[in-house]
Image 1 (tube, rainbow, N blue to C red):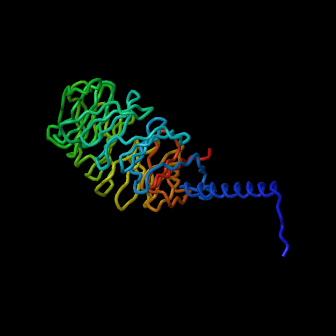
Image 2: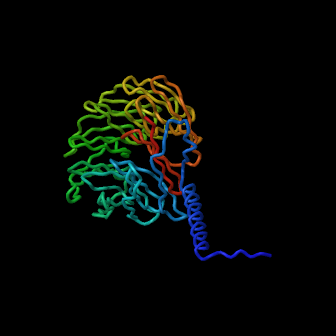
Image 3: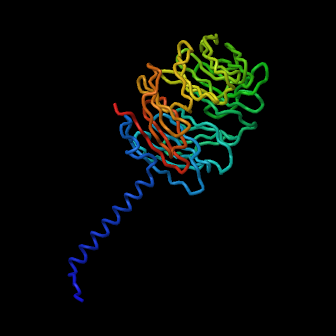
Length: 368
């Protein structure tokens, strides 16, 4: 048997070639493992992948909720870690655990370069750039919905059925107000001059931001579901009386209501082209913002992902992206994204953000 002897130079060259090939193979396996969506899935879809990222969460941890605020994505896990990512390129900005695992967290918002949210019965503020906790105010009451804020006050809804206004500079309580029927507050919307809040008895109330002076009140036939949304001079909301409402934000006067025919359990989404409402057993409907009339209905539709001109990108119950034409009132394309289990409605531009429980996140956008 003839034995082939290799020179040291050839041996090292082969070793380097093998090592490089092995690491290329590992990187390809790694890339596939981290991909929530593959380019092949998007062929002929009119969509492209902008970036994909895998959060460094432990095996038992699960991605719980996504928030979009300005140029950031904030991701909350069930271990109460908050991850901040640049939403244009997915670059990590910071990650922090603000409270121990198990305590409930409500809402996440930004005002004056400060993050704020409710954790348990504490109002927490953190630096928007570093995530460093700046303050923690323990409240003497339980919380019923996410807090709101303007430049002067925090507005917090308590289990005592009162809206509490805390001065922003030192978090000292300045005033409180309640609905006359003593109903539980379900959402708050704060501006510099006016504050709006809704209740589980169907009240939508407008007060002055600096004191409990009531300016107007509207009464729906059932509890307000999800947040009230202000768009221009209109306020939109969903009610357990089976209707979606539009009222005037200046006067509180009724403008229209859309009858869904079902008891609603989710709030609505108000985008540039339409109002989107999920209806149990009926799917998602797009409603005209001006007339309150149905544009289309998608039986497997779950929620709006984003809009681009007349197109609406909709997540379905079977983990697909349905592309709907709001002008022609028809579906024009569908894309399978079977691994997706988390999403967020993006109302800032046409980018689409999708995720799964393990912390894989994808940003897609329409090809213009």
